[in-house]
Length: 364
Image 1 (cartoon, rainbow, N blue to C red):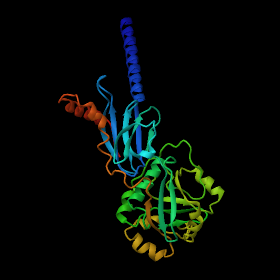
Image 2 (image 1 turned 60 degrees about the vertical axis):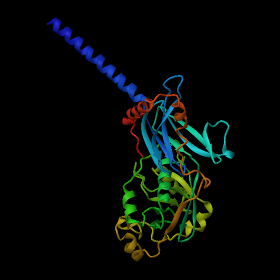
Image 3 (image 1 turned 180 degrees about the vertical axis):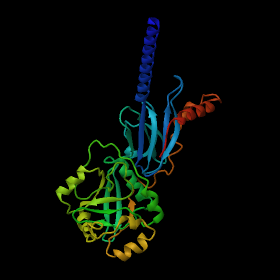
């Protein structure tokens, strides 16, 4: 009986050790994994490459293309701490910094190599070309000029620019305008487009310091977590300080602003007397705008005084003669490294890339 009790104790102790080791290994693996998202604010596609460390002192690191990130879109990867990604952007000779690392030059353009190392911690967001983007939108009362700030809310800024780029906001009704609150738009007159993007919501990004609201600030109109899709608003010029403080307390995430001059000359002139939806006002009901005849009969028949957006377009942030294709530069180091390799290297390279990508989790 004593022998049986002793064996049971040993068994319990052994199971406890196994569980502790399993937990330790799992925790260690979790610490190694990381999630990184690239947001492309460069107005052309950018090819992302994963960097494979050199196999020997005679070799150079190799670059494996994993995804092309389209302008104003996101690409997310499940990776591990310490992995490196590389992409290339063209610069003019006047923009060259002596500290930059360059790959090649063609027709006066120099390709700048950007290396991103995956770090531990919260989900990582890397902004490609995070410069301010200027957008001009016409409206029935005049043009407004919008400055989009990618660093304020990267996912929101990218979604807004993506929709501008495809013409989503062209001829949108300003369906909810309150002179002391906001002007809201974002339901496209194109039925196929508005129904497609209505459910294509984006997740909330982590923001270290949220920009405080003031007149002219723009944000998406969905405040519930992870629900931003297409509708955006502009804080009206006569919005009270108390109301702006309420905006700050909600989950609205500013991504840009309208030029100060346009607020008084254009935004303040948008038709506002319909106001909110019933019973709080006499404005259009969004659900009815989404119906097939929303723009054909509902809006023109019931709300003839509405103001409308016109064409929205992204103003170029780079010179027009930037090469359309950025391929051909990115693999230069890999080609140089393989000059002395034997014929079997291509097979090894493919195998390694396939094994790596099998668990990589890339998506846009």
